[in-house]
Length: 209
Image (cartoon, rainbow, N blue to C red; front, side, top):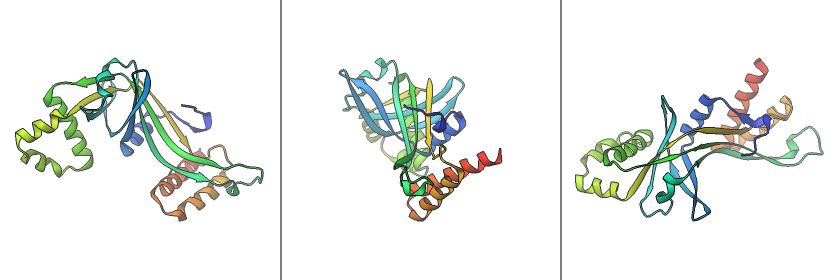
């Protein structure tokens, strides 16, 4: 990922928080010599050996048979984004841009073949998105649960490196950044509000130094 120094986020805690908050990711590998992507939720877990990502794909998905063969797979976590008008800058000779946040996680993948471990991957997702569903899952017949588990392939990605790009107008003046924040907040959509909030926190932290 192209990482100008203004926008390069390197704090592991910040990157991990972002991955947890925006966990609907894109898993990219090479299949038959060409890029192949699957959109899926992932859970992020800290371990003594490092951060690990857990998820699953459909058994009919042609991506999974080559997962373990990849030297590195790439999981892309995309966050809020918004158009930034050049009218918000102090200099008239300016051009439009786009603010956004993204994290790229790279690492080898292990395909999970043990049924109990694969079910644990599902339980992590349930805990992340709908804890009350645990009771309903337990009430399902063993035959039905086995059938559902038989239709997926769970995996573990061990993160070997992370890249974070938080493009929050850090290359503009503080006054321009506050003008952009003031323009984003009234839009009211989730992306604009989160971007404005992150821009405000980033600016406040820089000014407090």
